[in-house]
Image (tube, rainbow, N blue to C red):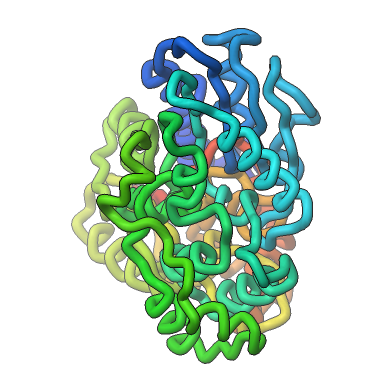
Length: 428
């Protein structure tokens, strides 16, 4: 699962790795989806989906329904397991986190499918993390390039997923309830694996099948908050606000239902069980933690030292979605940046090790899920002539942990409940 340094010569690495593996396994579609699948309808069963778990979710559905179901799902490049088709369901791979033309093609095909459904049919929609970027169809008058520029700017400035998705919904022809509205009066059942803090259905994949509480005014305020000046026609579209997203109580959503089948809490519970198996107490700091990765890490580092001073073995678990405001030119995602900032904050404190990974197996745009931290992380780095603070300032956490061989590389996991963090405190 990991690079050479986590070769099981470190017992703490083995335990932290097992916690991550069990957390990811607990939110696999094969474990959490089947019990929620509805019965076959009187009419047609149409399956649509978007997200990093879309392929795995479609596979579970085909095992249940066989070729009775037809449809289209879209997932991130490399997450389709080289399959173009699962049963009678087409698989399209597209760009993430920046949308591309393949995502537009997928969105158009999905819209065409749902618009052709009637009251006797059933649309089964699978959503998971990444769905916002993957299911991309610009609103009339806007282009894919417009959406790409706004997305890049928001990510670079450290906007939260809720803020990014607020803009996505108001630049889209399919998000913010518009997909369900297009399907009306056909019933649509959405089953989702949540990757967002608080499990808000309107934020998961930008809520294409649920009412949207945000407005065009909210979207403009997000741009103002981060000092983003969009192209004139994008600003005009937002200020004109001529086609607001469906709101709670909208009759076009009356045949839509939504259910979360897995979330971060489920993953953290599985990790806690691993700790309990070896007699270590676990403390869950929260499953919806947001904020700058380095700031969250610093706070967790202080807390870990405080617990460590008590002389009792335990593990601090947390989930959510941290962000990175990009100021340097390096590589790395929120989890590796968290790990580097945590290592600096701990400054070699004995008996404390940690893992920070994205449960989808990909941290940012790199080939790792995250990284591990050990009491000797900084001393080994300095032996190699590395200056941890400079790597952090340059947002180059990937480069730092690559040189230490402490990256965690499981590959795409085909699920996603976002960040997973475990800080193991063993003062003995």
